[in-house]
Image (cartoon, rainbow, N blue to C red; front, side):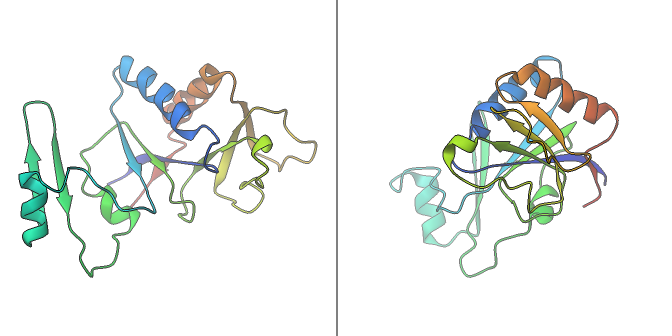
Length: 176
């Protein structure tokens, strides 16, 4: 099934989460359904070890689905299994107007880079041809690669407009 999929990449501290919060709040306010996949290199702790769901998972359950009137969470214990690919995980999500992916820098998907030169880290777009736009707090460099969109990180409404235009044009369409 085809889906609109956009990666959001950048170094730690660049403002990815702040930008995602802005985009999510505005997209959901106009009725768009947006999923988010967030990759972490760290262990994920969703419940304290003394809670029943954690105890059951640690006792050997392959999956624990924890449900309440407010939300539910499905936790799968990988044990010795390989981490699922992004596209395997995407198949587990409900359909949405857009899925935003934070992390997964290595995936061959359309990406928006959040770039702050003040962090002292190199721009990712110089090495990744899948980055189609950069949101930065500095002006575009003179030698900007042809076709790369440069957006002002300090004007998130312009990034939102770029994203909505791209969704309308199916710019982020991906066949998993």
